[in-house]
Length: 426
Image: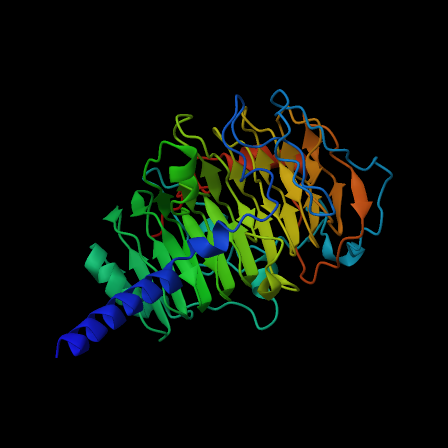
C-alpha cells in the first residue's frame, strides 16, 4: 500500500510540473541563444553591449558596452534601394484627389469624447490592416456589434473570452485581471480607462481582435527577475491572424509585447510601448523569436507595426527579431534612452517606411547576425541611417496607405485616436 501511495504522489507532482511548463510561455521568450541584448549581466549602460553575436555563433557578449547611442556594429552603407520589393501600386498618395485612405468615414458608429470630437481610426468597423488581413483575413467575433456582450468585472471578462465560439465583447472602463482569449474573439474597450494586468497571453489560438485596452506589467527590480518575468503581451505557439489596435502596453517585465514560436499574420496598430520608470534593468520592448534555434518560426512571424509609438524609457528592441518579415509603417520612435532601434537577426527582413526616428541612435538598423536584409524608405528624424539598405527584403502582400512621415508624430501622439487606449465608442 505504501508503494502505491508513493507512486500516486510522484505521478501527481510530475503532472503538475509538466502542466506548468507547458503553460509557461516564457520558454518561448527566454531561450536567448546568442542574443546580445539579453544574456549579459547589467553593466553601466544596462544589458545591451551593442554588438551582435558572431555569424559563426561565437559569443561577443563579454565585450564592454560603449557609451549610450554608440552603435559599434557595422551597418551596410546606404546604397539606395537594394531589392526594395515594394510594389508601386500598393502605396497610395494621400494627397491625390480621390485617394482611398482605407478608412470608412460613412459609418454611423464613431468614437466620440465628452466634447463631441470623433476619431475615424476608432470606428467599430475599421478594416483590419496589414498582415492580419491576408491569407483568409481576421474577423474575430464577427461584425454583429448589436449582439456584443458587455462586461464590467474580471470574472465576466474571463468567462466571455473563453472557448472558441465567435463572440464580441465590450469592456467597460475599470481594472481587470490578466486573461487569455480563446479563438474567434473581438474584445473592445469602450472608452479610455480599461486597465488590464499583465500578462495578456495570446497562445495557440487564431482569429483574435483586441482593441483599446491598457496593459501594465508588475514591477520587477533586478535584471534576472525581469528577464524571468512575464511579458506585457505575448503572442505565440502558433497563434495566427491576430490584430492588436489602440493598446497602451507598459512595464512588461521581460518585454512589452513579444512574439515567438510560430506566431503569424499579426498586425499591431496605434499601440504605445513605454515604461513608467527607469528603475528596472530590462527596458527591452519587443522581441520577435526567442532563439536562433526556433524551427517553428521559419517562414512565419509575418508582422505589421503601423502608427505605433515607442516612447518613454524604451532602450532596445523596437523590435529586435529573427526569421520574420516585418513591415514598420508610420511609426514614431522618440525615447531619449534608445540605444538600439531595429535589431535584425538571423533570417529576418525588415522594411521601415515613412517612420519618425527622433533618437540619438547613429543607425536605426543593427546587424544581429545573418539577417536577410533591411530597407529604410521615406523616414525622417534625428537618428542616422534612415535610408539604409542591405541584402534583400520581401514583397508586401497587402494594399495600404502610407501617411507622409511629416504627419506621423502629430497623428500618433494625438489625445483622441492616437496610439494607446485613446478611443471612445458610442
